[in-house]
Image (tube, rainbow, N blue to C red):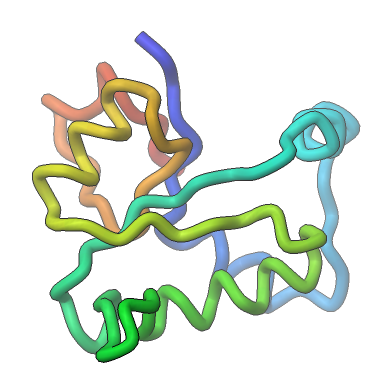
Length: 113
């Protein structure tokens, strides 16, 4: 199974730092990515939701905006219902999920920090 990079508290740690500190391996991985897709629930306001114009909104979307300033716009939010986001991540169709709880049955598919 493909391990996925899960964004839970990691964005908050990055934003709290004065600069982005990454290992050479992390930098190489980021450089190799054209786009990093992040699944977000479409109806969990105010955290993640889709606005009246069909755009990802909420606290999670704002974090992605700030991270994109550091990552050259590589992050793209894919908003959908929880079941769809979860299945897309398990199938490797998206790279990460925002706001997922670490549970034993999920550890086979996801890497939690």
